[in-house]
Amino acid sequence: MSLPQSSRRRIGPAVTMTLAILGSLALLATFVFQVVTASPSTTAQVPARVFSLIEGATLNTATDETSGELRPETITILERTDEGVLAVAFLTDEDAIGAGIFPGKGASIGLSIPGKQAIWVQAMIPGDESTSDYTLSVRRVGNGDTFDHTFTAK
Image 1 (cartoon, rainbow, N blue to C red):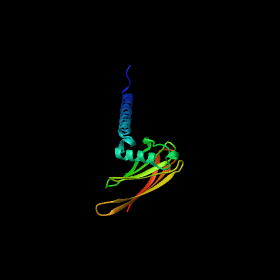
Image 2 (cartoon, rainbow, N blue to C red):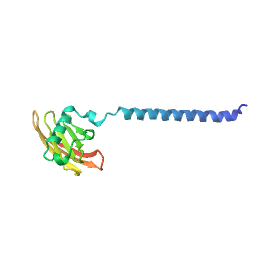
Image 3 (cartoon, helix red, strand yellow):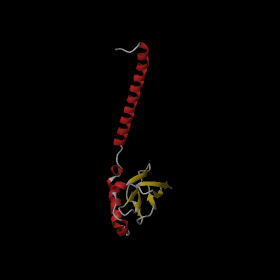
Image 4 (cartoon, rainbow, N blue to C red):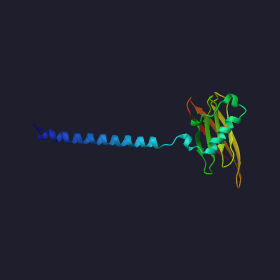
């Protein structure tokens, strides 16, 4: 049994349109999957030198008894200047917030007491021609590992 000519004329474009839409959705899903799997984790972006300085600071801080130990998965690079200075935020297992400014050598790191939602760090870094004054203000957003920040250089 075959369909009349008028029905075939109506079904053909509908089938073509359906296949085109399904193909587009498949391409979109593939693109989203590739973007999600290609994005590196935050700790993979953190240089080893920065990680060891933060770890050392959390161990040697006067408040380390109450501040807790570093949670490496929370280390987030907030900003990177053209000179290579990094602005970083992190959390500890006791819910203390930390922030750091990392030039080529040395670091300036601050660690709050547990429960605080904000921290402020300042660093003066001597350069070849002048001294740069960096200020980092970090505020924790909600209860997660997300941060709002202001990073300025003078």
